[in-house]
Image (tube, rainbow, N blue to C red; front, side, top):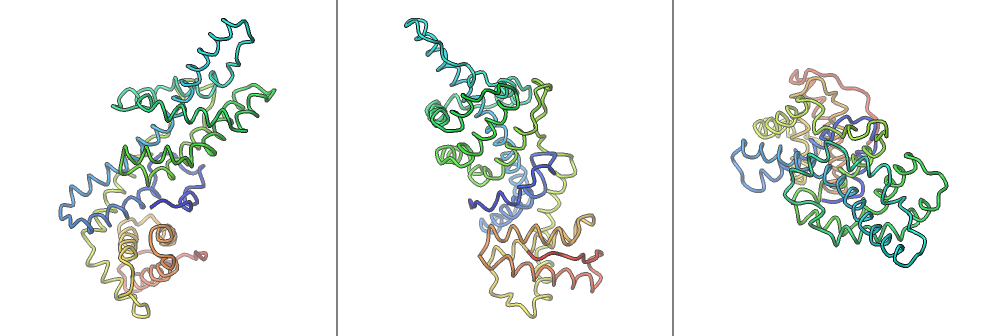
Length: 332
């Protein structure tokens, strides 16, 4: 389910206070609800635990990718020691320490939260020296690295910006890293494009003055979002027949029988959100699930679901089953 369009959904980095936000929860709920039916599962408690576990794995990946930058910095120090030893023996000019002792990665390496995460993991990037070494070689050969090493400006902001560029250019779309992550977790192949956005946000937020106490993004902003995930998933499953009846009632002018199965799932969850969460505007629900449909269903699904959900919402409001109002919506 990889798609370059996914980043578009999460492009507004400034509005997120936590790693697990409602956009991610909606996508995970779609994925796990689809799997619930495909696998013939009848145990909703087990399925709910799977959803929450899937979300926690996304947060693990966030920390794991931050740790990758620390691993590369450690590899740089290892190679620097070898090069310094050679320079001393040969009486030549010692190599630059600038990259190995980059201020941003030093701060990241000392970060209390990240250190706790690394310390609790059974596997780390130290178990994959070939990949880390290959990534270091890629960095050292890049124009980004060469420009940085020759840049007369030597300060924290320059060091941090280097790693933002490295991440966007050499880590965000790296097939070797993607393959390794897929081997390590079934969830991470789909998660990485989303998580990349939050790693970049974290790099941008780092402040030298915060030192080792620089805050990383928390897993959840509040217990409310964890409850949102549980309630949305349970409502989608437990009220499936009722919600599909709403679809049928509102689809007299639509060819409902020809809907892709994923479209039905997406609309079922969208209706669950409309009915279960009074504070979420109808327009927000429709727009979010139309975006998901564009990514995970057929090419025509976005437009179809946009019209269907609009018709369903109006029908539910008109019949008094949905106590919300329809806001003006832009074209999706």
